Length: 168
Image (cartoon, rainbow, N blue to C red; front, top):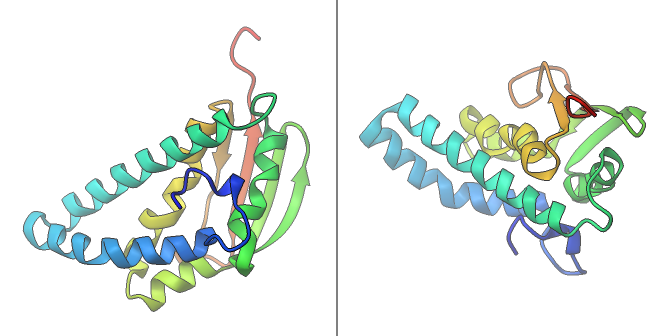
């Protein structure tokens, strides 16, 4: 099942962590070939752009299936999809209608990419999806994150906020 419908997951469907591992296994040789032919910078740029666009498209699909329209609360209700299978260990700091802050203490996405020898591009395979997802789901939701486990920090600091459009 594609990333576009885990909100509709039923028993027996793969969780996001398992899907990311499969995707990474498929992308690894493609990325290696792009890197060999085009160089590291260009290969990473292509991967970055493609994954961001996929995240936006998946988020638009989630948004279209959200009864009553999107909000920061409906966004929070999706969180279990990324934490299932113990994929993330998080500490919620704040969860209101306008702010959703949490810290990730353990990230099995990062652990998986490192175990696959893909730690150097794990941020492209996973972390860069987070802010892009907001763009497709509800552009009023903004993410500020200053550090990630994927890139060696002690934790990830997710700080989402809902911004009302100008003139609202």
